[in-house]
Length: 140
Length: 140
DNA sequence: TAAAACGTTGGAGTGCACTCCAAGCAAGTA
DNA sequence: TACTTGCTTGGAGTGCACTCCAACGTTTTA
Image 1 (cartoon, each protein chain N blue to C red):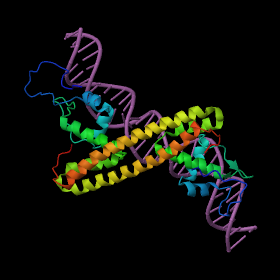
Image 2 (tube, rainbow over the protein chains, first blue to last red; image 1 turned 45 degrees about the vertical axis):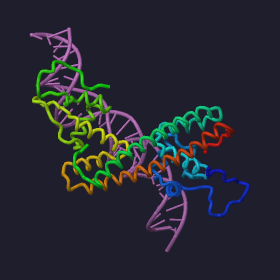
Image 3 (cartoon, protein in one colour; image 1 turned 120 degrees about the vertical axis):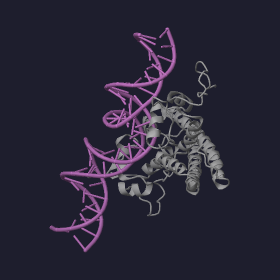
Image 4 (cartoon, each protein chain N blue to C red; image 1 turned 90 degrees about the vertical axis):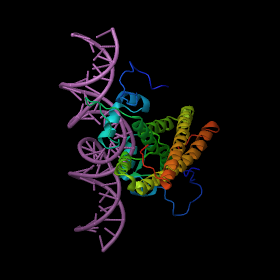
């Protein structure tokens, strides 16, 4: 479920702002302000709005995008690929097929990684069991 | 795939192909020779035997260790922690408890990572589904 | 025996994903 | 207003895990 469908027709409670400073976004996302600026510089953010003096003002939509990017990061996707995805989004609706392909590749990668991890889990359990009981000492 | 061939007259009594050159080990493990030397330099390998002229000769035991290290690497464990584990092995049997603790920490980390990945999988599936059906165009 | 292929070392270089710095302008508080 | 904290930029620096280099010695093959 994405966070971004905050509609403008229904007035939300006063706790929800529509413009966030970089440090507010840093606190909300767990990213540093440095990293947020860097994301923008490399093209991983859609254009971020500015105040009349040039300071960044992030929207709810930016927050939603950042949440999704956070998920992509957790998949282990390289930043370069996330930038590619962001480019596709900027290019418009005709890139849907490529976006889906990218996501499906990522999905396959995640599945593979989960299988790998479950494999290591088996080895780890064997080893832990070994230390828990007999404790023979060869490094193997 | 057989590892045992690759040469020659089986004359010398001391050489029962249980000694592997660095490039053989590279081929068997998928690591590069560079990486194998680097592993040794940083203390991630137990002492590797040498030929009379100083070239490395890996044993079956080294191969087993490398296989285990490969599993640890797949867990995402930092190299520094793997080196710590290797040190504990070198220090002898009285480090069993600490070794087990290290492995149990790693196990918990793997479980967490699997959960994270399954979470990203849910988001990915939602998104892929979205592109598969309606294809509305907001970047979210 | 000669050439090609393989091995050795310390140290330098690479790519990734941040992370920080300096110097100066902007915003909120007493 | 003065002060303190926050935000701006381009560019340099960091830490990790390799990855490669130069210059030379060793082993295998023809």
